[in-house]
Image (cartoon, rainbow, N blue to C red; front, side, top):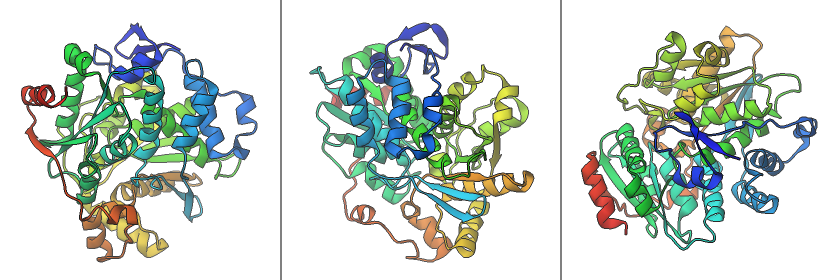
Length: 434
């Protein structure tokens, strides 16, 4: 399989180059030349398959030409060592829990798959691989966990100062070993811009053997499509689910579009955002206007220039008319999010995190406007990761903290503080990554 840049169909590379270099030199994103479709042999039996069997079928469709089946099965099985259960709050209102992995966030699926695929692709090399990643909350912790002490790798995580929760920060700053955290005086968009600039500096990228673990990397998105197919089996046969996705950088929604491309029947995708509503405004007006990000209580969605927007539009031939037929968008304020956290607890006894609360609001709005529709809202992180918000709305100590989070409380934060200046960051890389 060859992969091309969204900015230049003539720029084509193999799988190893697409995954390990992450970003084309023209600042586009890599996409497969041919988008696979799973045939009747899969869809005729998909409801009876295990999560792992679904994952292997999807991974083989994308990567089977380049990775041997036995190796790919090991990668998938090592990724899916935990479930993604569907919880029904009331008829037609479902929650897909994606927080049962080691760092209690949906990013575990992509990060674990990526780490295993990269290890496979570099197994015969003796060069150190430097994984560079920007995070608005959960990505950094998931990547740190997935790559921690993996031989031949080192990880540099950039995160915005004061804009991730305390426990999220500990997940990416307290591991040590081959994990280094940089606290950037700016927003997530600033962190993301520094990472992209590093990849576009071809001399720097080659010398330091840089790769990205952000959702600009295609190997992050493919495994996230596994759970769309897995969860759709919970809906009655013949009913097309509406997937409601709390959205920031739009990798998760793009993964859903890949599942649809594979043949999964879907009624609609709903992009649920906070005040950072660039994509809902695009869907309403047809004009894409990135803006500086705004800080909210659903911090992982605080993205003003979502990277995966170009992949989303590429899947629809850059047609606004086609994309708005498949995706709708809606945004909510912090106060509406807080109200939803309390309401979901009061009505259903269910504790939902701020990102899931934004999704739940969007799902309710969609069902009100489309009676009879059945929604699956992606709950992307465990509520215990946001103690300040959850304690304020539900009462201190209401949300039980899983042990793997609780043990981080006394861990020491280790991070270097840097300005959002490119030359300073480049100099830091040169002085600290040899």
